[in-house]
Structure formats: C-alpha cells, structure tokens
Image 1 (cartoon, one colour):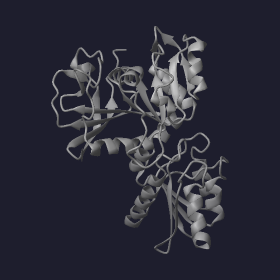
Image 2 (cartoon, rainbow, N blue to C red; image 1 turned 180 degrees about the vertical axis):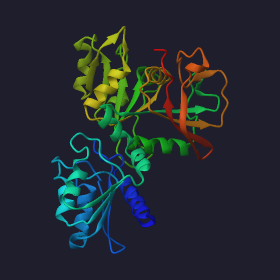
Image 3 (cartoon, one colour; image 1 turned 90 degrees about the vertical axis):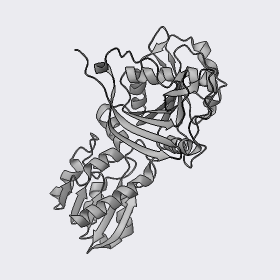
Image 4 (cartoon, rainbow, N blue to C red; image 1 turned 45 degrees about the horizontal axis):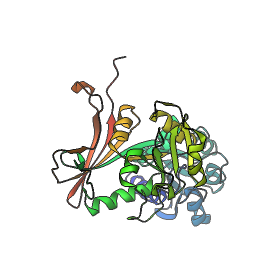
Length: 364
C-alpha cells in the first residue's frame, strides 16, 4: 500500500501540469510501474492533445506489459479527440490498474473500469479519492450538474472594506497577494465582474502578473450601462451578459468588436445569476471566477451560485468605506452563510482564506 500511495501521489502531481489548459476535460496524471521501477509516466497537458495514459504508455513501450498503472481518473471508454484510453491500456498488456476515482462523465461512468476488468486486468478504485476529487472539482461539478464551479474572490482590509469612502482601492492587498490572484486567473475558464466595476475601474482582468493564458472576461450588465470601448472587451473572447429586453441596435457595437453576447431574461434590468451559470455550463465552461464588485458578489451569494470563496485579507483598517459584499438579506444569525473546510495561507503581509460555502436550509 505504501508503494501504491507513493506512485498515486506522483500521478496527482503530474496531473497538475494540465491545470488551466485542459478544460473542459479533466486534469489527469498516469504512472506505469514494473518490477518496482517507473517505466513511463504522463499527463494530459492541453485540451485536444494526448491523454495521460496514452503518453505514459508511449514512453513505456514494451515495458508496459505486466506493469501496474496508477492513474488519477478512470480511463476513458469513448472516442473523442483521442481514442479510448481503456482500450490502449488493455492492448499494452497492463496487469493491474489503480485508479483514484471513477469518471462521472456519462460517456464513461464505469465503462472504462468494466472494460479493463473484462480483459483480465486487476482494477482497484479509491486510492487518494478525496485529493483527486478536489483537484478536479470544476470538472466534476460540470459533469454532474451541467454548471461550472463558481469561485468568489475578494481582496479586502481586515475590517472587510474593498475601498475607502472616496472609492480609493489601489492597492489594498500586497503584490504577493495580487500575483497569487493572477495565477488563479490562469486556472479558470471565465472571470466575471459587474457593470459597476467596469464603470469605476475600467479593468483588463488579464493575468499579466503570472505566466499562463488569460481567462475569458465576462461582464454582467442587465441594463447595458457599460461602453463597448471598455478595456475588458479587448480581452480574450469577451462575453457580455445583458437583458433580453435590450434593443439589438445597442448591442451592435459590442458584436462588431467581437464580444459574445448572451441576452438572458431580465426583470427591470436584473439578471438571474443562476441562468448565467447554466448558460456558461451549456457552453462547456467548467470554472467561473467572480471578482467583483460588491453588488455582484452579494447577488452571487444570495442566489446561491458560489461554491467556494477566496478572501485576500490585508492588515489594514479602513473604517467607513465600501464593504466587500453587499446586502445578503440576513436578519437572523441562523440565516448567515457558513464557511466549511476553511484554510489559511500567508502571502507576504496578507492572509488568504479559502473555504467552501454552506448555505442555510430554506424554511420550505
């Protein structure tokens, strides 16, 4: 078991090489071991390219025959951009397969495991399952619900302010915190802000402080108050979510600039954020980072679309200023949102708090 754990942890580290590059596919790592030695290993590095198992098998060659495969996700059993990995594992003569978790994708859903077992391969599932599920939380959320994993990021003072009462906000958090936040931007598919943030700050929302691709920027603006010339619409395949009642003529400048427009049902300019995440999921978006502002943050929490929060807390006291989160409609403590699996990390002088959001049960 100790050797199995060592090799599975190695496979999980390999899987990280695909973070931010393989969506809507999962991150996967694979290690082939024969007679106590690693004979091949691989990772799914980029969407459309070879899967981890295929890369490991190619590197192992004939040494894969009789080997044990350690893989972080059930090998696929369908034809996509690449042939089924389960078939390749069988053809290579692998003797034993240790999988961290099964694949909930309806095209797989146990078929890869079943196919290998029928071919006489000894199959075990569940080693490091929790870590594997955490690693692919976005993929699992999308495959089981059809919606992306939604993260809420806030940079704030110790007393919960994102700006002074005059609106000054640069920079509340340190450079170390900003670099970390930019690295996370490279990991997600889409980064979302509200119209207020665009009007106040005219942000780019790029990942300029980190190496990696920029996420697609998404602006939620039910009343279409923003300009098509805002810097955010010069980003990577930008998206504008606005009300279906907005006249087509007002949308034309955005379309001409290459913005993808999602006209969604609205009530008085208010967009149902649940409809936004559903629309994102339908477009194979598996992860969405909400970065601001306070109105969008509060709306996302009120409408219960946020799965996890990332709070960058600076050792500052601002006092009267702009709160990071708007009204959540909480009158009684029993109605408050709770945070589970809370983790903290120092980033220079700042503190990063990450947690999963637990919503109170409705009276119904």
